[in-house]
Length: 67
Image 1 (cartoon, rainbow, N blue to C red):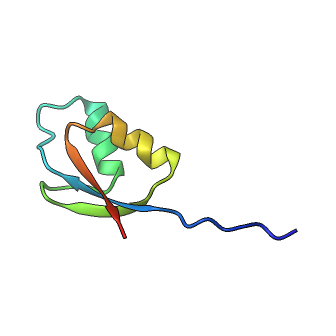
Image 2: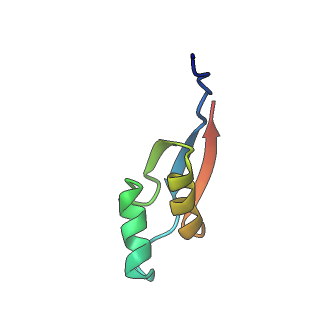
């Protein structure tokens, strides 16, 4: 049987606020997303793991869908 391949959405995650006053766990999540400096961004595939990480630091990042 052939599996159908679904187009996975890609999202652009941008760090918009500093992590200075954040908890250590939030700092680790931002680092795991690949963000280092303010206005740095990474493009990730929208899977449940990444979306959960974004939910933990939603007050620090902005998210856009990439077409």
